Amino acid sequence: MRVCAFTGHRNLFGTDFDEQLLKRVVSDLIKNGVTQFLCGMAVGFDLKAAQTVIDLKSKYDVRLVACLPCANQSERFSLKSKQLYGEILARCDEVVVLQEKYTKGCMLARDRYLADNCDVLVCFLRKKTGGTAYTVNYAETAGKKIIYL
Image (tube, rainbow, N blue to C red):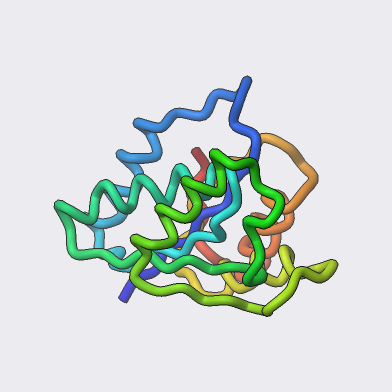
């Protein structure tokens, strides 16, 4: 089984994010043997990536796994983001909860989990700092294939 994970920025507004490019990349990965997708379920890129996989599930036999840093991850999301999060979570094939409650460092633990458990990482990276940059650097160090959008 080939596994893909996603990482990207929470705020996509004002960026060059291209949803169609994401869909083409995910479709190509599926056509090349990826059957499972890991998503950290953060607002922004993560939820867009998860929705892309869900949309393609009607056409392909793939699995979507939500990898939550803590059980109450969506607690501080806006109402709209909470609703989207809940809808996507309900359509995941599996949910992995890394710890019960939020603690400092649980997001980075989730990021390492994603990188440790994938063969390829698809990222939307535009800043040299933050969780996405950390995840990409960690995956590079681990020798993972990385696809930059």
